[in-house]
Image (cartoon, rainbow, N blue to C red):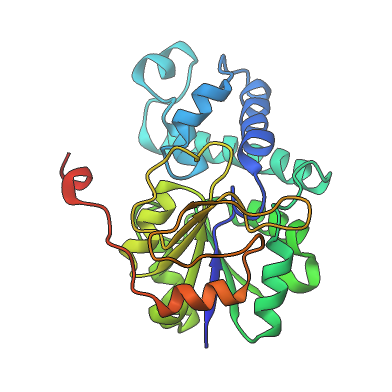
Length: 268
């Protein structure tokens, strides 16, 4: 049975700039922290997989001392958990408000895949509550109920490590040669490729200039009537039209995987 696995942020919806970033900043304000990430700051933080991990990057000895935060590991873990719970609540409220519309073609291709008997899943480093909120809004609750969601801290290493995709394959009983991943970031592509998966990239607001080596196809979006898909890189000659559909996913599965990234990145 073929399987379609979506990343969440930047794939189901372009959530980072208008969702996660303001939610982080609202959380910092609520806890009285002298931190407000700019657009440029957050673009850099996105190199770190996971929201708690991005927050943890603040906890330098100097920041901890200046703001009266716990210096011990257990205390910092509890502080991060409190911050992240608040951030998730703010973010899910934003999603529920309709402030983060689904990206073009998401509901269409998910519905097509479901009707054709494909398994559907989401694999994300974001908190499960955040992912579920975005998924419900992007495809509707009825179709969202047919997805398996793999999210948050259920694996020891987050993307670009392949752990989340390896877990999804194992739990779903999916064949890597019958599985397509839709990602938006270089870290996500690296994770999927390391798990032996073919990857379709729909670039998002922060990721257009990232390295997508190993992806089977890179497009501006999945496309719809008002926003057609534009091909950015097509190393295998998939040659999609203005709307990416199941025929394009089938074509990706028929073709060999592109060469993965060189070891230069891994050894630097």
